[in-house]
Length: 291
Image 1 (cartoon, rainbow, N blue to C red):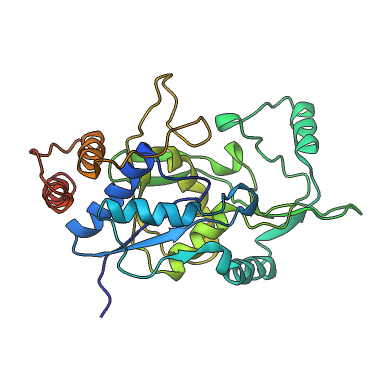
Image 2 (cartoon, rainbow, N blue to C red):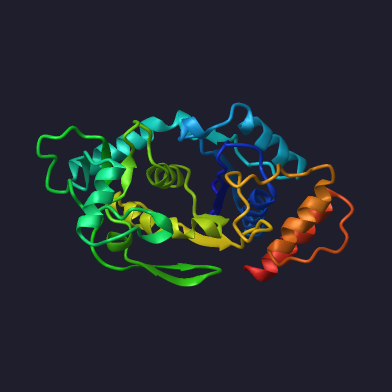
């Protein structure tokens, strides 16, 4: 019998976990345990060129060292691409997705001609050039036809959020020019296929949520409950990430690593002696903070 709660941790194997990764992993694990639910592990390797050989095995080892073991065998996105194509085919049949011939330079020039610059976080908001057809050009990518209007959602930690996806992002990519499936499509399809009811992840991914809500509605899929956790910052104030050279997680003392991660989440642990003790204390503290 399936539990009502199903959560997941979904790292990209672009390198080993760092301190910020452990915060996100721990939060998602704690939320599942506090709600007597199941915790799944998904390796998000859909962006093949960025993946580092052996990083997935190292991530599994790091999580196990911290006592974070999934309740089902891990899954790999690279083995699920038929599901993404099936979803894309359905959107195309419904007229909700269309081919696009634009390069990034084409988009930048079109926006410049409209007197528009870059949108959120330096992204190029797609101006809708190919919405009405390719006009003889070769297709490069596939995009979702985003409806107009504000997209509201409520995060368990951040509260009510709003984004006008059509204006701030535009029709976003579902399948890239290099033939790879976009993160937005893969994560929405995976969350539904795996029955995910609760998504707990880092705050840096909060800006993706409105796009995923739009896509869920287009595919007639249920929407999980979201909670975005605080980020671990590098000394320069930027988000700690593999891209800016974050050091691999030091697990010489896994208890200390868990205590530090719990502290970022606002959970104070009382000198746990073992990994099991640290996780037990953290679960009780999380259940009290996020019922």
